[in-house]
Amino acid sequence: MTQTNSEKIQVNPDEISLKDLILKIGKLRQYLVSKWMVILIAAIIGGCIGLIYSIFSKPVYKAELSFALEDDKSSGGGLGAALGLASQFGIDLGESGGGAFSGDNLLELMKSRSMVEGALLTPVNVKGKTETLAELYINFNDLRKKWDDKPELKNIQFAGQNRTGFTLQQDSVLGVFYKDIIKKNLSVDKIDKKLSIITVKVESENELFSKYFTEILVKTVSNFYITTKTKKSVQNVAILQRQTDSVRRELNAALTGVATSADVNPNANPALQILRVPSQRRQVDVQANQAILTQLVANLEVSKVSLRKETPLVQIIDQPILPLEKSKLGKIKAIVFGGFIAVFLAVAGIIVKKLFNTIIA
Image 1 (spheres, rainbow, N blue to C red):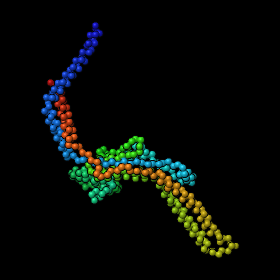
Image 2: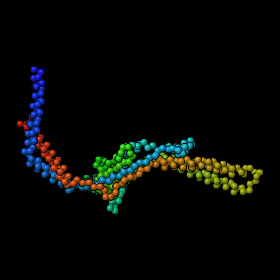
Image 3: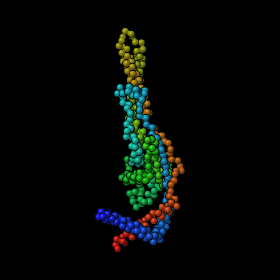
Image 4: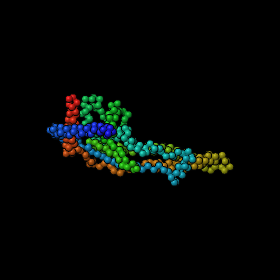
């Protein structure tokens, strides 16, 4: 019997608190219903605010570009044998390092400050006028008006791509542009993690900026990627080309020397062997230079093949075409959304006020 009473004692408080909770919820509901006029006025005000925002808000234009990377780093078959033969003669025709751009690193490269600022400083043709994308960004965001009370920014210009002469204010403004674009405008991602297709999306209030910035950013990153990845092979080709040209000049000079020696003594006395020495020396130079030139030409051709093989291909799949996709909050959606937020805030305020008055009382 004692155990049963204790169980009842343990259960009763819970049952009472649950009943109290239900009663309190019911009272709160009745209280909110009694404030229907306040909630209705809040909904009307919120709907009006949403409507005004929908009318005066600018549409957002979305530009989307997708591309695929083809990067063949393998050196099989005859090319591999040729590279091995070239390495025996001290010619380094190894592959360029591309690990820094593998996987998601390329996505981060497209969102790096140097790439974004490089695209912003690229001049484009806007309605017959040549200006940089940075100037276009300033114009459609009405930043000149906001800088009227800032003398150091009022006359700031971004007329070219040369960063060497930029002032501290120009660097600072470009840094702000970069942060805003990365946060609000630019999106870079893969369509599928298993694929090498990358999609670049730019959303802004200016249609031309969205289109131009998307295309120029991809082009800037592509050029940087190809240049960096093939830098070593390009240097090898340049060195071999200089060596080949130098040996060819020496060979031509040796051939000229042989002919000159023969012309000096056209009818040399066979008994005087000393007269043949100059011509024989030149002939040795000709043979040596021919052998060297043959090997250098072979290595040069192998190096050029290696360079072509290591040069990655950036293939554009889809690119933005005017007119771009336009998105804007509709009037009905704006009214419903604004009214919902206003009702939520009004109900929250009424409940807080009710709790506050209860605590004070």
